[in-house]
Length: 212
Image 1 (cartoon, rainbow, N blue to C red):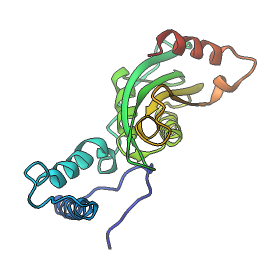
Image 2 (cartoon, one colour; image 1 turned 90 degrees about the vertical axis):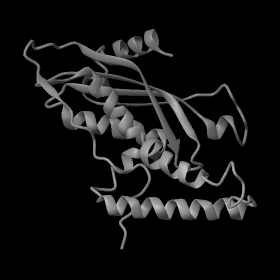
Image 3 (tube, rainbow, N blue to C red; image 1 turned 90 degrees about the horizontal axis):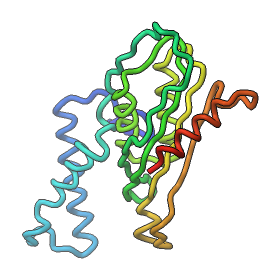
């Protein structure tokens, strides 16, 4: 029996080439039937004949590729300089898909952390965000998952902050069709939750100075 997971979960697990091909063929077949059920002559329309294959490839290799791949290998380094300030990276572009309507979510991630024993190679923050985003999910789930991955990697950290601002096409292109709204989510831990500490305020100042 094929293994399936809930949307927003980690990844499907290591699949053989044969298993991937089987899923791809099945998805392509059922998407063709879906289009046919909607009323399109997908078998004879020259513009749509290959659409099931293209859409399946797009989901499995691009938009939802994180479903089929483990988290990328993350390089960490010792915090040999005992840096105690906030490490911040902002404007990390993500493109995901809402698990309610399969419409795009497009936005930016802002990350801050105060290192303990280790620091992360800067580009690895981008890789974590992009991997988490590459599956059907909710923005709330993405925010939590990115935070969880950073907590696992940053040994003995003093705090991690994740802030996401994104536009949802399920709001902009359907339903209320409100083109100017964005959704903001955040998750904080450690000193970023300490009301006696200035870390949260400093982080939000960095976000606001960088925000796209």
